[in-house]
Length: 116
Image (cartoon, rainbow, N blue to C red; front, side, top):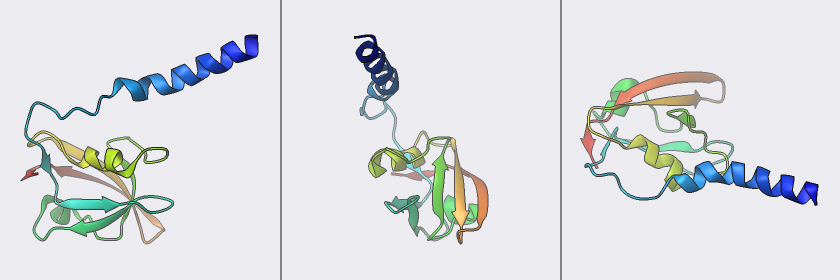
C-alpha cells in the first residue's frame, strides 16, 4: 500500500506543474522572431527563417537543432507547445540554445518584434 501511495505522489508531483499551465492565450498580441520549428529527433529543427527577420539577424539558420527555448526542453512536450515559446510580448527577448551541424552549440538571444 505504501508503494502505491508513493507512486501516486510521485506522479502527482510530476504532472502538477504541467497541469498548472493552461493553454489559454495571453491578454496581449503575440510577437515572434521570424523563425519556425518542426518536429525532428533528437531535437526539433528550425524549418524556416524569414529574410531580414530578428532571427536571421541574430544568426539563426534553417536546419539548426533547437535544444531549448528559454530554458524549456522539448522532451515529452508536443511540438506546438514547445514552439510557442518563440512568441511573446513585443520587445521581450527569447533565448535559444541551438546545435549547428551536430557539433557546435550556440546560445542566441533574439528580440520578439514581428507581429504574429
